[in-house]
Image 1 (tube, rainbow, N blue to C red):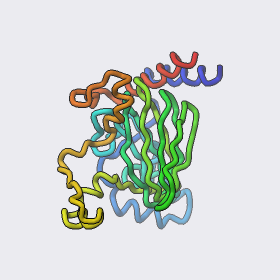
Image 2: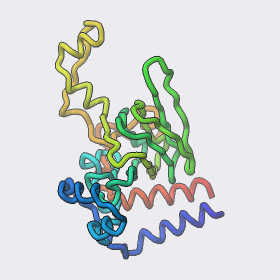
Image 3: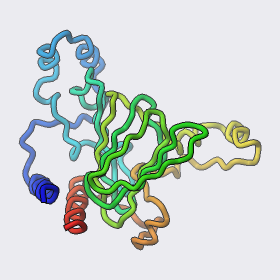
Length: 254
């Protein structure tokens, strides 16, 4: 009952204009401000530097990482766009995954990730901590969390035909991210071929690597009748994806 009430409240709040003086900075913060915040000796000094605008961040109005993909987007509030986190050792992400949406395999070199499925279909989360370890795959229903250790290879994928809303926190203000697709194609052909034992490893066209959130696994696409070649919800707002995820949760569980 409490979960249903909270979800209903969240849906209602989405229809109300924001009253907080939030910010969504698109460009990297001024380096002088970063230096001053790091050198501030007291909380009062930090608050004077930040002002009211520097203490709030609007995920719904901020641009998605990399401009977003064909199946949703993710927004990271870190030390490059949210001055309030500077010196605090933390960052936060909101993800708006469309049907079968997937965040491709990647690592965060400087932070562990605490991932929560807020609302929507179960998430498939797979993590590989290091060489020699077997992949660990988990099904995360709404309200479930998992920890993704710093430096581990991991991915998350929606398994249902409705959007999924996720939130993640990081124990660093600059967690960083390296997508394996981008890392792979960045090396020259000879290096890649040698790494795979000289067997003629494929070098992919970097211009064809999709932006996150990508259209996910074939198993889900077939279940939901989604055509990878034509599916594109990049024009759907994060607000609408969030509303659909919350409503889908209410419809599925109550």
